[in-house]
Length: 354
Ligand SMILES: [Ca+2]
Ligand SMILES: [Ca+2]
Ligand SMILES: [Ca+2]
Image 1 (cartoon, rainbow, N blue to C red):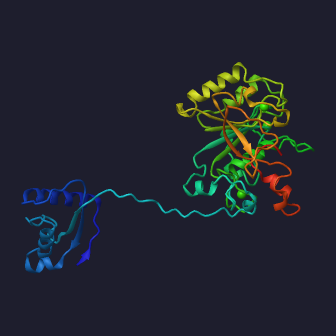
Image 2 (cartoon, rainbow, N blue to C red; image 1 turned 120 degrees about the vertical axis):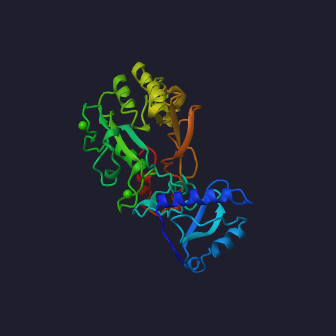
Image 3 (cartoon, rainbow, N blue to C red; image 1 turned 135 degrees about the horizontal axis):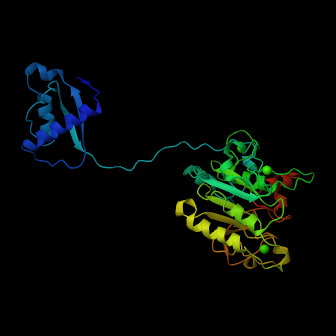
């Protein structure tokens, strides 16, 4: 007896026939739902002219044999069972990023669990795949070796110069690096042997160059409304002066951009505007006085040091929705570090202060 592979069409024909046969036999069981039938080529059936094996199996399962099937005389049923739906989970093998700086990215994972628990999220499959993020800032180094693979030109624009290329303007002071660094924190490529990894390392990342020039209401609105059916998340780490005496917020066009984004963006699901809550802690600034972070259309994100403390630059206010790890207080946890380790940590921190 050997197993025979059959086509889908043959199988359907076979099933319809056997169900028909069962319905005309003295059925003691009711077949509900799908039936799986294993079809065997049975030599023994030929010898006696009696499909004895089929009879036995049908009897065991409470059925009565009626007849062999025309065109399928050499085949018979060996087993039948009602099928039920089972919960089965894909066993994807999760591999920890191999990037050389990953172990220094303490905010993603570290043994004392003062971290974003990123590994657990990645293990569940949340790696940013299918998500498009755009950083509204001073540009993005689109050819950076750790960003290139995830760079998305459709999530990018240069509002300052009015062209599609948001490459930053290089200066001696290197003061247009912020957008590129934010982009790396979000979507630096994982396991490419370069630098570290982004928290959402499979996300597509773009950048809008809009801070390297005069910022007007129109510049803000243009940036906030770039390609809203393509971009999922807009990340902005800027706002009015954090001097403790300025109350300001979006003007007419930016307000309209927010409104259009949240109502029409992402096919009506709404654009997601993520906002840094502010760096005016030293001046006792309040993010309640910042019309971008306290807007109901933005998700305002505050900062924590690596020990879970409030950093010196942080602004507390009621519009803050969540807090993430960022650069810490200069004297914090120094004793646990080796000399020279401080700068390395500072560079890799998730926030926007350094
Ligand atoms: Ca440009
Ligand atoms: Ca990398
Ligand atoms: Ca502020």
